[in-house]
Amino acid sequence: MTDHVLALDVGGTKIAAGLVDAQGSVVRRAVRPTPAHDAELAWQAVADLVTEVLDGAVPSAVGIGSAGPVDTDAGTVSPININGWQAFPLRSRVEALLPGVPVSLAGDGLCIALGEHWLGAGRGSRFMVGMVVSTGVGGGLVLDGKPFGGRTGNAGHIGHVVAEPDGWPCTCGGRGCVETVAGGPNMVRWAREQGWTGSDGIELERSARSGDPAAAAAFDRGGRAVGLAIAAAAAICDLDLAVIGGGLSRAGDLLFDPIRQTLKIHAGLSFLRGLQVVKAERDDSGLIGAAALVLL
Image (cartoon, rainbow, N blue to C red; front, side):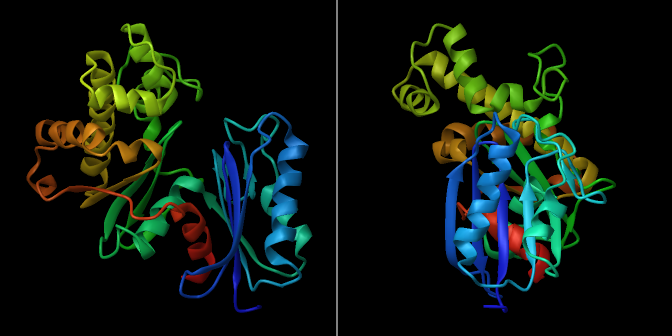
C-alpha cells in the first residue's frame, strides 16, 4: 500500500488515524479518546493508532493535523488542551516511527478547511474559511485555492477573534474570544446562569427548540459571535465562503440563522455581499485535510 498516505488528526478530545488513497477515500481508520491529562499517554495513543491503521503497510507520506498552536518550521505542537504538550516534537516523533517516510504538519483548523475545500462543501471556492463550532471554536483558511498557514502555521484561529472585549477569560490567555461565547460548554454555562436547568449541548438544543428563552438566547448569542468573527475574517481576507462543521452545526437554523443575520448587519462592504455560509458536508474533514497536505 505504498500508494496510500497516512493521515493523523490529533485533537484534545479524540485522535484519529486513517490510510487514505489518492482520491481521498479512507480505506482503513481508527479513533481513540485523547488522554489529554498525560503527555506520554497522549503520544502512546498516537503511536498505537499508527500501528493499528498501517497494519504492516508502509505509506508513501504522512500528513498530520494537530490542535495548536503549532510551529510548522520546528515541527512542534503546543495544544491548549493536551497537558504537557508544550513545543512537543510531534513531527520528529512520527518520523522516528516511519524512517524515510516524509511527514508534513499543519494545524487542525487548516486541515478541516482543506478537507472541506477538496472533497466537501468548499469545492469550487477560491477564498474560504473552514470552521468547527463544538467544544471549542477553530478554523483555517484556504486563499486563492491553497491552504494558508501564515507565518508560523497558525493563521485562521478564528475562535480567538474577540467577540466581547469584557467577556469571560479564554483558555488562550485572552478574554472575550468567540470560543468563550460560542463553544458548547460556554453556551451551556451561560444558559445556566440565565436560569436554564439542563446539563449539556444536546439538552440545550432540545430546550431551544421547545421555546425555552434562555436556551434560545444562548444559541442566538453564540451565532452572533460566530457571525462577527466571519465578518471580520471575510473583510480582511476577501472571502467568498464560510463552511461550518462541528457538533453545534448540527443544530442547524438555531446556529445558522443568527450567523446570517449578523452578516447582514456587519458584512456591509460591496465585495462581501456574495459571502455564503454553509454547513460542512463531512465529519472527517480534518482527517481528509491531513491527507491532502501530502496528496495535493
